[in-house]
Image 1: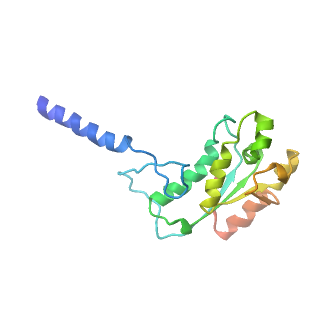
Image 2: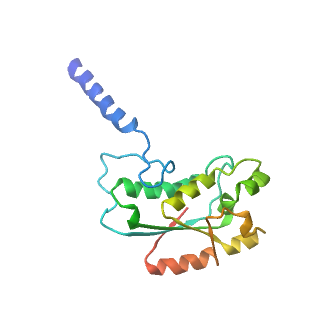
Image 3: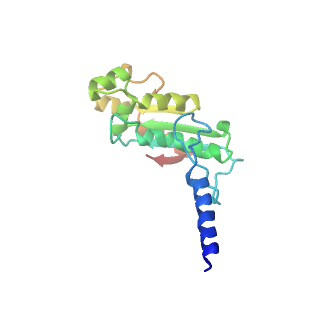
Length: 180
């Protein structure tokens, strides 16, 4: 291959890569959380004409209590990915039921500091999710099992009878179940 053609291909490749990989994250629906990126080559995209009904079963605990749980942030990513594809916020009906080890992400900042000696950074994400229209629920059975009471929790959460019955209530109504 002629060396000018070779260098031209290298230059073109670097321009294409920098335009894809040099992007800043975008936050079309959930502001400041769940940053996502444009994928110019994507051929499989959400259908912007559909209404989405999504139930997230969130039970996985954070890996590091000092950081935002990647699982909580993933709910924001889910919404932002749909938004980037043109799905309007009003067409996203997202419910999250939190149980198991993930329940601690819902503690008030005071309760979180007492338990983990650090601020609860997840609360900012939950606030942004609530503002974006997400319905956030906690399993009442998990509260009892962990000897927690409602006043220990972030005030934006609703107490559900159980995660199990929440799932069996919404899946027959056409909600797609995602497990985080």
